[in-house]
Image (cartoon, rainbow, N blue to C red; front, side, top):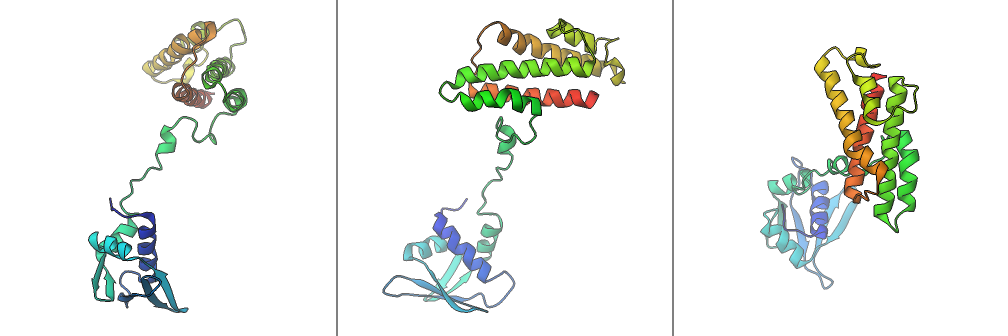
Length: 230
């Protein structure tokens, strides 16, 4: 990481653009003026200037990005490396995948329709709105399991529904070539209904937004796995 301000990083990026690595000339001049220091650059469009303070110049030199002798300066190899690596900034693009509901583009349409309006309207009491959203997510999952599993009996709910779908002779048993995988699906979905659906159906859970969001994203994954079995 570099101890530079955003304006100092911007100055270096502009210099690197003006003087690509491997091209000449790389040398430029910093002139002291009454209005402050300026970097005089020359390119195909003619002369142009880039303002730089004494502190900015010293910061770039201290980081080993700039070498100066009097008014004459050059960029170091480290300067090009700094810009190429965005000043060693860590790649945080993965964060959105770890943040529940940060990206809803791939969210199941039923979850969008049943859960998001509640969350959008419940900012005054976020815990209450998340309780409703989690409850609705459970119902979406149960309804999808019944539909994909071909169970017409609407009174068959929760763990008994899971058993009808994923038992050895269940409606989706033929989808599995390995019995241990079928049993794994049975245990997974039965656990979701036992640990989340049942408590949410019988009393207020009021999960935190972090827990509620994580659950909805997990239900979204379970819905996708069901669709793969359709």
